[in-house]
Length: 394
Image (cartoon, rainbow, N blue to C red; front, side, top):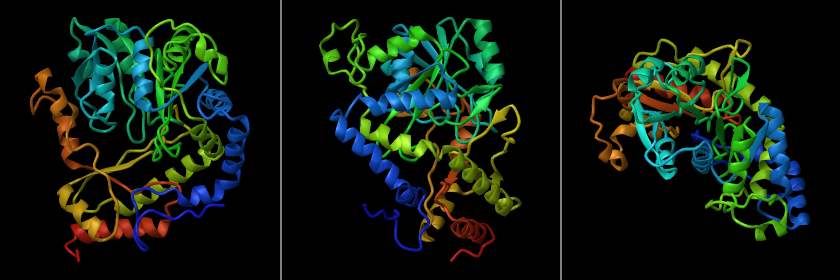
């Protein structure tokens, strides 16, 4: 049995660690990995097929297609949904850059929209105002702990005849109006990057959809455009190529790890909620904190999941430096909003175009939050924040 050690030095609170999780789950992971070696197929094999079935059961999706990253999932979903060269895709100005670069990689053109300052998702009113004659898709993003307002966004999409796809990369376990994240339009995606709520030990992703045509296209596109059965089928690699696809097959080693961790997903989600509540209780009223995340009871029609515990603060960069000196890891989401990223300069957006996105980019910081985090470590984080804002910083 391998030894698992936490990231960082003793006494520090890393931004993310899953050492204890791997220690506990290793017997299950080892058994799954042994099955991979026994089968002798390490990519696009039986464990991937089993994971697809398990995720379909968990999310309620009619089809789940495993791919090699959340970014590829977005690109393939857009292609399978019929994007054409130059099609406008309305996306939030505040998100990870892959939200918009996936549009470009699929042949479309990002059209940025300001966000709701509470959910950090597409603001429905701003979305309605941003639609142009060239708009053909809308792609809301579910960030940090809650979904976008899919009722309002769907209404705008219907009114303007926009194809709705979801960047639900962070959305595992999130529900709204009886549907899992990613299943409110044509389809959505999941990312299994290691720090995600359900994380692999490398890159992996999936497309979720209830549309059989979209599912068939994604399944072919992930394996060079081959549409005959190829999952766990060596002869399938010799079939004819129906369209130009790519190599985005999921590794079975990632699927083996994800299958083991999926058994504890609901437990992990509940633990994340407990830690978020502890943060809320300890940080409420601390001067310098501009906004704490608002929570929704999972018994309501909107089930939140704390993938990230994000706060908005004054003097954000100074606080980050102070916490680093105290051995506390943080992550800044996202210091440069998408419309100001150099790779999108040719689109012509300017500072001031999206004030909510720009305000968040200047104040938002994520604190350590993961199932292996101990409450005593959380107390250390909160005490260091209080020290900074109350003038007792060491």
